[in-house]
Structure formats: C-alpha cells, structure tokens
Image 1 (cartoon, rainbow, N blue to C red):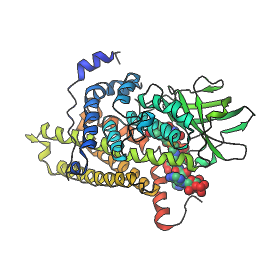
Image 2: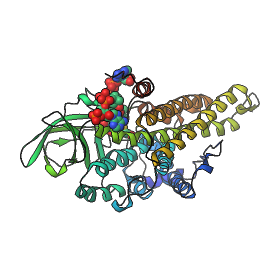
Image 3: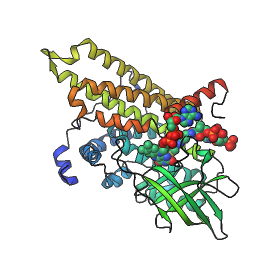
Image 4: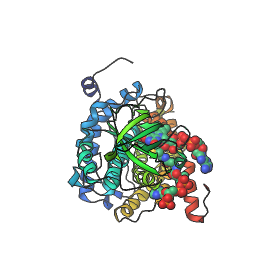
Length: 405
Ligand code: TGC
Ligand code: FAD
C-alpha cells in the first residue's frame, strides 16, 4: 500500500464519515445534557480526526500513534476517575458513551483507551499508593504516558490464576521473571501493570517501566484482527523492580479481575458502537443500491435483516444504559457485566456479518468499515474473558454451581 502522511489522509477523507447513530427507542432521552455533550464532542472528534485515517492504519497494521494526544484531549483516558488526579471526574455512563463512540470507528482504538483507563489507570487509582497515583495518573490521563496490562500468559489465558510469572524479595528490590502474551499497547507502552506471584504464591500487581533492564516487549505480527492496535508480549528476565512499584492495596486474583469489571463494562458499550456503525452503513447502502430496478431496501429479505439488527441494537442500548445506572450506583455485579459484554459482542458479530452480506461484494472492501469491524470483533469476543467464560459466569450466578472448580 502506498505510503501517505496524516495530512494527506485528512485532506482526502475528511467529511466522508456520514454516521448517524440509530436510536429507535429514544434512549437519548435517558441521558443527561452533560452526557450527551461529551458523547457528541467525542463523536465529532472521531469524524474529524479518526475516521479519515483508520482504514489506512488498519490495512498497514500500524497503530496511529499521532492520535494519542487527541484521545487524551477527548477525555478517553480514565474519564471515570477523579479530577484531582487529572482525570475526567465523569460517571460510568459517560465512560460507556465514550467507548461506544471510539469503537463505532474501530475496536482497536477503543482497546487502547480501555486498557489505559480501566486496566492501567484504574488499578493505580484503586490499589496504588498516593505517591503512585500522583506520579502516574495525570500523565496517563493526557496520554503523555501510555500503559499496558499484563495478565494473560502463553499457558494461562482463561485461567489466569495458574500464572507462573513470579517475583522474589531481594531486600531493596523485587526480582521479576516470566512472560505475558497478547498484551494490547505493549509495543509502545511506557509502563506495564503486571500481575505476578510472590514467593508465597500470592498474586500481586507491579508497575514495570520501559527501560528497566531485562524487560522487553516484542510485537505480535500477522494479526487479521485489531490491526490498528499494537499487541505484544511482555518478557521479564531478572528485572529489578523497585519496591515502591508494588501496588499495595490488593492481593489475589480479585485484583486483576476487579479491573476487568471496569474494562468489560466499557466493551459492552463499545461493541454496541461497532454494531450501530454496521447497521447504519447497511441501511444507507440499501437505500442507494439499485437491483432489479429498485433499491434493495425494498426487498423483504433485506428488510428482515435490518429489522432484526435494529431490534437487537435497541435491546442492547437499554441493557448498557441500565448497567451504567447500576455502575454509577455502585450496585453492578460482575455477573451482570459479564452478561452485557457477552450479549453485546455477540449481537455485534451477528450484525456485522448480516450487514456485510447486504453490501454484497462491496462489503468485503475497505471502502466500508463493516469487514474491519467483523474482524476486530473476533478479538473482542475472545479477550477480557471469552464468550464461553462469560456464559459460565452467568451459569454459575443463576445456579450457584461453579463449572470452573
Ligand atoms: P475464582 O476462584 O472464581 O475467583 C478468585 C478470586 O477473585 C474474585 N473474583 C472477582 N473479583 C472481582 N471481580 C470479578 N469479576 C471477580 N471474579 C472472581 C473471587 O471472589 C475470588 O476472590 P477471593 O477473595 O475469594 O480470593 O477464580 P477462578 O480461578 O475460578 O477463575 C474464575 C474466572 C474463570 C471467571 C476468571 O479467572 C476469568 O474471568 N477468566 C477470564 C480471564 C480474562 O478475562 N482475562 C482477560 C485478560 S486482560 C484482557 O483481555 C485485556 S484485552 C483489553 C483490550 O485490548 O481492550
Ligand atoms: P484459552 O483460555 O486457551 O481458551 C481456548 C478456548 O477454550 C476458548 O474458546 C475458551 O472459551 C475455551 N475454554 C477455556 N476454558 C474453558 C472452560 N473452563 N470451559 C469451557 N470452555 C473453556 N490479555 C491481557 O492480559 N492483556 C491484554 O491487554 C490483552 N489484550 C489482548 C489483545 C488481543 C488482540 C487478544 C486476542 C487477546 C488479548 N489478551 C490480553 C488475552 C485474552 O484475554 C485471552 O486471549 C483470553 O482471556 C483467552 O485466553 P486464551 O487465548 O489463552 O484462550
């Protein structure tokens, strides 16, 4: 693919994004003016600065580094965390709306934001010392510093409790050894929040900084999914981690899983955004595409697809709106979050596939976003707990029987 500058891409593609958000049940009326204001400003930023460049970067499998300050200014990094640490000070519904607008454009960009906000900033805020919060959070909020989250290992994905990455106490520092795999943002992150076992086998969180000797972040190539997001490994070979980099506030698997609640919540909104974009694209196309002398929107089979898509989107919008209320009230359970993540990613995948067919051959090209959404969603259905794992969490919640034990 021919190389282009950002300026060339913006000049060629600005104004082409004609997204109109579907809102069949007037869910907008349930939002506050402030929530709508933030949502609309992120939507405008996406149309102006992200949509024009995203396809190019996805095709080239390159993360668009130049957007980081824009994401920070749009409030995408830790909007739900307190303003006293330079964060957004907003509610969880607003956080969800921001993730929805980003993933409407591309799941990989939402990934970057949800890792930063929910998996790096959130654990530092929730489990970090006051010094750690003051040192890292303001810079992470603007994007001056970027982070990643290391939980998954080559041999421990769905079962993170089996992790083997470990650290030992060497008096004035810890010595960290092991490896993490499939880590979003790893290739460029300045810091990594890493979950590892201590000498007693207890899981703790450590903040590992780029540049520490023995720490490397090789990039994972040849992905057909999330191509605009950078994924990599975290390799630790006798890394000396200062003692002040241990997160003091939590011990055990509940540490990383608590962070996942926040990130999975954001994904439930985000995946819905991708579904809404697929529907909106297919609806517009169906009104313009003429076959057999009339717009394909007039054929009953195409109407069935669109009617079923908007029905699922409307149900999913109501689901996340209610979940946002529960999050803001501090009442959302992990199982409720699992249900929303699983449902909304599943409907997004199905809607993507149907929408792709409605565009016929054009649906497989980069002229339209649908195929990119479909491929991205194949990662989203797997990360942050697979489709199966979330089903088993719901199963355990309703029956009281633990299928993992
Ligand atoms: P189990 O024995 O059930 O629980 C261990 C401890 O954790 C507590 N707990 C939770 N706490 C907070 N939130 C939750 N959601 C929690 N779930 C469990 C639990 O109460 C217990 O606490 P305690 O005090 O008794 O010790 O754990 P298990 O080993 O049986 O595993 C349970 C299972 C399978 C549900 C869990 O491990 C799981 O969710 N597996 C999926 C792994 C996963 O989601 N990995 C995600 C990696 S990060 C990622 O994918 C980022 S992609 C980001 C992007 O690019 O956007
Ligand atoms: P496995 O756990 O090996 O699962 C394989 C299959 O077995 C799945 O279908 C699963 O549902 C099924 N399965 C497993 N256990 C059970 C069971 N008990 N019952 C029934 N079925 C079961 N991780 C991070 O820590 N940080 C990141 O930033 C991050 N980013 C990622 C980015 C991308 C693009 C991808 C693809 C992954 C990322 N991950 C990250 C890892 C992700 O969380 C894991 O891939 C995921 O948790 C699944 O683990 P696994 O791939 O090892 O699959």
